[in-house]
Structure formats: structure tokens, C-alpha cells
Image (cartoon, rainbow, N blue to C red):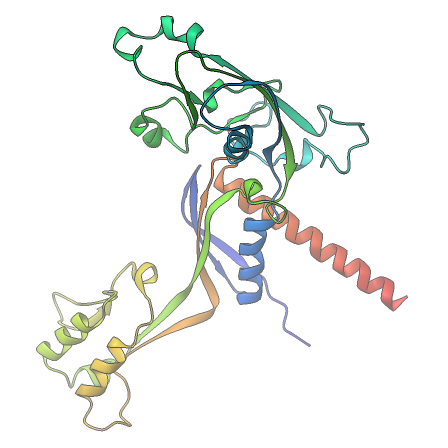
Length: 323
């Protein structure tokens, strides 16, 4: 019977748009399941239907609809500024009992930008330039739901626009539409994916053979440090001993360069290695970056809920088979 495990999570760094954490006391099956759920099965809102009243811009209807679909839609629960899990607030439109759409399964956005009406209100130096229609121009009928214009203040400060660019309008051009956002998962379409990056790497186990290293000269030790392209080793300034750098887990790539350099220094091929770098089988370093639709920590919590629900469903089905 397999041994029961108790996975643990240790937060390394956290921000609304990114999180880094260590998942330990588990194996690759659990790590990969969590990663794949974050990518493909965490529900979010995204624009799924666009109804045009007028479009005289240079882009056709389908192109603009595609761009609207890729704008992250953020749900912030009442009393919170965090991009939260929309699964409790909305139903999938396939599960809703309404005929077409309703506030329980959809959110409506309206966009109405006319160049000739807006241009007189712009600064004089901008009136000869095209008018950029952005996500800021989308008006939601739900105060808890809005487009995620920027990931953070730094990105906002660098941007030349007020939000995510959709299209540019010129004299005589007018864009008016209604966009319907629905809840879904990216297993169906990538526009519902809440993460831009969701990866993990194995925690490195760096073992330094002190007894063997004492037989090396300072120059040979420095040669080992230089042979490692990911710079996970350094020389202690006081003792001159080989030590692992503090953030080795961020840089270890398990290349063969260190192994090759060691083999050249050994007196006999069967001698023990001076330094061994192996990957842990039960400890993983995760890096997750969001699209802006949800805060990073909310993505982790939602993914764990989905995983728990799947396991409970599996357990129930197994019990039925026993009966």
C-alpha cells in the first residue's frame, strides 16, 4: 500500500500578478496535475459573443471580436480589490436555465466610440492623430466585473494608452458594439486561461564531497566554479571551500559541464565526484504569472479546489463500483 503523503506549500514571493512557491513532500504526478489545472481548468470570464451595431474601422468584425476575446476580464468580489474566483458568482451558459443569457451566466459590455465626436475634446497636438479604442472604453453592466487594463502600476506607467488597444479610428469612423462575457475554462479556448506562465522546476540537491575537495588546489576549485554555466557554486572567502550559492535553486540546470570538468581532475575514473547535482523527486519550485483576470494566489486556491473536486468525484465513482 502506498505511503500517505502530506504535501506542503512554502511561499517564496507573492504579488497580485505573480507568485513563486515551493511544493514539497509529493511527487511529479501531483505537481504536474496542479500545473495543468492552473492552465486548463480554472474558470474565468472572457468575451464570447460580440454583436455589432456599427463598424467602420479598418478592421473587420471577426478581427475585433478576436481581440476582444483575449482581453482579460476581472471579477472582484464585493468589498475586495482582488481578482477572485468567479465560479461561485456565475454559472456556465450551458448549465444556466435561461433562454439566451442572463446576469447569472453572463456580463454585458457596451462600447461606443465615434472619432468625430471624441476628437474635438482631445488636446490640440493629438487631433491629427488616430484615436485608439482601448479596454477602458468597454462599459460593464456589472460593477464587480471589468477588463484588466494592466497587470500592475509599472506596466500602466510605461503604457502610451489607457488600456489594452483594440483598434485605431480615423475621421468619419465609428465603432459601436455589445460584447457578452461568459465563464469558461481554457480547455475549451485559450482566452479563458488565467495564467501567462505556469511552470515548475525540480529542487536541486547539491552535495559537496568535502574530503575529496580537500585534495584539490584553489585553482582547481575555481576551475569547478567556472565550469558550471549556471553558477551554482562559489568559493568561501574565508575558508576557500566550495559552497553552493544561496539562490542555487533558481539557477540549477543540471548540465553535464560540471561532470566533465570533474572527470578531468580525477586520478581514477572510479573516484567519487567532488560535487554532485541531482534533482529532488519530492520538492518543486513553481513560478506562476497571471494574465490579470485573477490574482496569483486566487489561481492557486481555485486550482486546488478543482483538484479536490476531481478527487472527490473519483472517490465516489470508485465506491459505486464496489457496491
